[in-house]
Length: 196
Image (cartoon, rainbow, N blue to C red):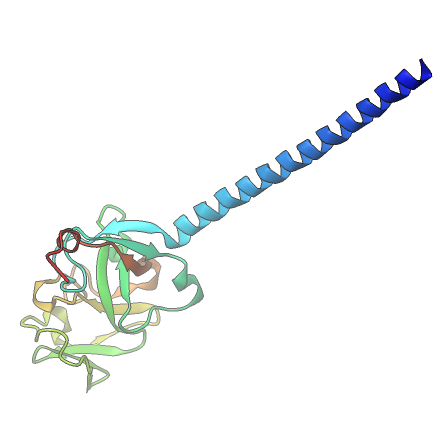
């Protein structure tokens, strides 16, 4: 009888040890899942917001309807640089669609468009003839002095772009920049093999 009791007790202790290990494993798995979900949400929030390009103002780099991912984290660590393609809301208007444009003028600089070309602080900006000569200088016909948190932006398709030359957009405040266009999805033409 004493032997049977010892065997039963031994079995009970072994079963209890097995259950505590199982509980520990389940707890670790739950913690791992929570951490993974948190990281996924953080990555999507900071670096994975999506939007679509509206219009042909960024052609040939980006085409109408093409989806892009927005890196919202990068400008928490650094400032936009000349040549960056940014996503912003003009004047912070929440009812507007996201605008996608290229940074040309930086805070503290003076921007002017003369004879269809961009001048920064009176010096012609070397853009290696990547863009068409602008037929309309808009409000940049006169010098525009950017404040310490303003950027001057243009579309790559300069003669078909509503950008900082337009009075209803003007210089873009840092507070209204959503993030940097980080990665673009293949356009319909690229998916169909029409563009190499």
